[in-house]
Length: 379
Ligand SMILES: *Cc1c(COP(=O)(O)O)cnc(C)c1O
Image (cartoon, rainbow, N blue to C red):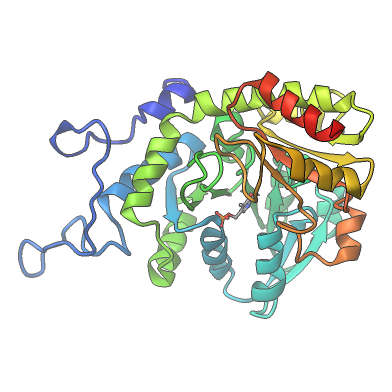
């Protein structure tokens, strides 16, 4: 088996596409002709499966070490489809620092539909254990978490979940399979917003569920074809194209992020930098064990709301926009954007206040990015 950066380009499971084309063709077809009455064709209708999507899914499954991956029209579509597997009953333990859209789904869609959630700090495996109920069906974590970069020990969480007969579901959006493969550490399902590092260019939405167990994969496929939030062929093409350059993008993003994190840490206007690559980060040892890189994300708390607003207004290279993981560096004000729907008290408890900014580092020149932050902080 080749190393992961080779497999981003040449996945072993993908058969050569039609006519030997080096890129998978975009099969822009809603339906497929049946050869004869009663014969089973490999493809019948693109909600069920499409050759471009099948090639992408095989690639993602292989990178994450799963038996199957299903591509959805967005990360949220993947998560919403996944929630159907619990058939509207049971209990889920979820991390208390999650993507805002995930929290909204759990609180305002899955809870009214009958599921019960306990949100806890999963950086402590003990907290997971304490929240187990007789009908706990799953433990759901994001690691590192968005936006405060909390690290959960995936192997420890898997052990606790499995002992209770529950699944461990890990949102692996932030590190991608290049740096972290939760299924190999014991997780049952990996969730991705493919919109972020896998796509990598801030130009399309996508989501994935990757499964280790064929029986779970079969269930996911049932709900995926029934709910219908599948990824369109053109977007599948863009994702495949993105994944081919995942390693060069993310290596550079990670190298840039490390330089920026250390530089920000020395600035008088910056009170705290949230970056998992600092040896004094509480999750550093766990990260060294379970991940092979620190990624391209960091957050910071500046000294005043005025400084926060000044930085957002004055940056020239960084762009003030939601999302992350793409080649363009972005800066986000979680309080007003990704986490606007999180109740204020909870938000503040986690440090997501009016001085808190999240940075997604792109592939620009690191010195240019640092200079941009310097001029914004000093303006
Ligand atoms: C963006 C994001 C999502 C949601 O994905 P979409 O593609 O925007 O629907 C889920 N989890 C994390 C960690 C994210 O960053």
